[in-house]
Structures are given as structure tokens and as C-alpha cells.
Length: 394
Image (cartoon, rainbow, N blue to C red; front, top):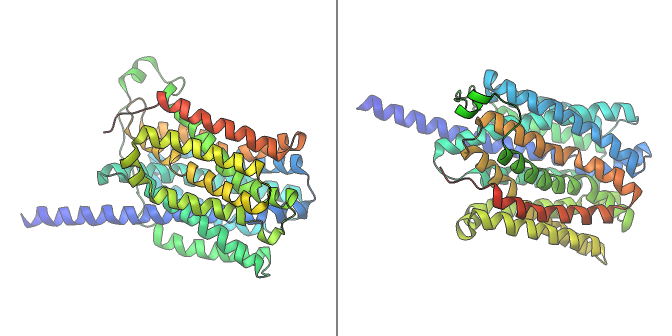
């Protein structure tokens, strides 16, 4: 009897440690990637690039993520989440200072490629761990996990913005972020999942063989792509939008993404309660409408202060779309979880890492205002796809 009780206590303690580890790693993911946002206007001015050329440069991060995410989905079954999360964290903190100093497009392209590799690998491995931990915990945790990512993003962009506004150089600011990331990794990585359970391949796939991901999985991926595209547009272009259209100082250009991150953090930490009161179907549709409204406010704002309000609405609207979608992927039985999550993550993170590049390229031919309006229309498509991607609770 005592042995069974001890085993139960050990299992509970292990699961608790895994939850803490998952939260800390989500914080680190948001903290490290969002710290890049205030550096974007500096990078564009340092390299003397227009919107189109800078958009092409940002595409390197997307290429890196597209290479890393499918590879991570395949490797995670063999080596577990811990190795891949640790690798991604170390790569992220090593690359970040370079983004603050390189004065040539070639070096920035290489750094952004590695930045995309780190962010993409980190996202796939960590979301798989989150799905497993949520399932083992027998309660909804995905919104709070992604809430920690938003909190980390808020902390990252505010820390970087405050350092830059105080006159600290971009390089010293980036090094400070990397040191903090290293401290977080020491606490977060050891309790990550060393291995994950092997899954049975669905019978339908055994008979017909794998050709394309299931239609529902693809639609969920597209929904996440649009949400992440909106988030990527806020991270990479909100500061440039303020400086180019409203002549806001580059030292304060990070304020737009700060408001976005604050609202997203609040939305994700309240996601569990919103989910209970609105239901899974409604929360996705209402969130998409809120985000679309926010971008309409951004493109019609008469003053840059109003733009900040618009980005807050975008952040709150986007906050719970992705967590709900990843929970659906974790509950579905159409594909193995690792394969489905790798597919959805690849499509989704492509939105945050390649979408901003396309916005820059097309925005140079038209304008950022027009591109933001197009993204607002795309957000409304999430409500439409929501009807066809529902998965019954486990």
C-alpha cells in the first residue's frame, strides 16, 4: 500500500515538474523571439533597405523554420522533447546578439535563418510536450501554456524597449536578453520530456499509406497560419508602421507590439474562463472578429495612439485561436499526434515567419495599410473554417 502511494506521489510530482517546465519554456520562447521586434527598425535603417528588400531578408527566418519544423517532428519520436528544446534554446540565445549588430545583408540573412531554425524547432517540440502534459493532467492547460509564451513576449519586448529607450546599445540589450534566456534554460530544460510514447498509426493510414495530411488537419493549420501571420505582422511591421507613417522615434517603436503583447497575455490567461463561458466554437469565431476589428482600427487610425489601441484588439483577438486549435489537434484521432502537430506547426509558424516577408514585399508595391486590411479580411476566414474543424472533447 505504501509503495503504491509513493508511486502516486512520485508521478504527481513528476507531472507537476513537467507543467512548470512547459510554462517556463513557453515563456522563454516568447521572451527570445519577441526581443527581436524592437530591433527590427534598427536593422532596416542599419542595412538601408526598403520594405521589399527587407521583406526578402525576413524570408530567411521563414525558410529556416520550414526546414526545422518537419525535421523536428520526425526527430522528436526518436530523441524526445528535452534534447530538441535544449538545442533550440541554446541556438536562439546565441543568434540574438548578431541580429543587433550585423551590417551586411548576408550576415543578417544567415542569422535570421538560424533564428528561424531555433524558433521553428522550439515551437514544434514544445507544443508536442504541451499536448502530452495537458492530456496527462486531465484538464485544459493549453491557453495557460500559450499565455506564458505571450507573457514572455511581453517581457521580452518591454525589456528590450526600455533598454533601448534608456540609451543602451542594441548589442548590449540583446546580450542581456541572451543571458536571461540562459538562466531560464537551466531551470526549464532538465524537466522536459526525455521521451514520448509511441502512437499507433490509424487503420486508414495503414491501408492506404500516407499521402497528404487529413483535410481537417490542413484546415486547422491554415487557421493557425492566419493567426500567426497577424502576430508576425505585429512583431515585424508594427514598429516600422509607426516610424514610417507617424514618424515615431525608433526608440519607442516597440510600443505597438507591447500593447499587442499585453492584450494577448491577458486574453490567454483568461482563456480558460472564456472557454467555459463562450464555448470552444464561439470563442474562436468571436476572437477572429475581434482581431479583424483591431486591424481595421490600425489602418484607419487618425493618430498613432489609436494604433496602439488597434494592436491591443488584435492581440486579444488572436490570443485564444491557436491554443484552441492545438488542443483540437491533441484530441483528434485522424493522424498520429506528432505528425499532426508537426504539420500544423509547420503551416502555423510559416505564417509568423514568412508572412511578414510577403507583407513587406507586397507592401512595397502597395502599402502596409493595404496589406494590414488584407490580413483583417483573412482573419474573418478563421470563423468560416471553424465550422469544419471541430473535434469532440476527449
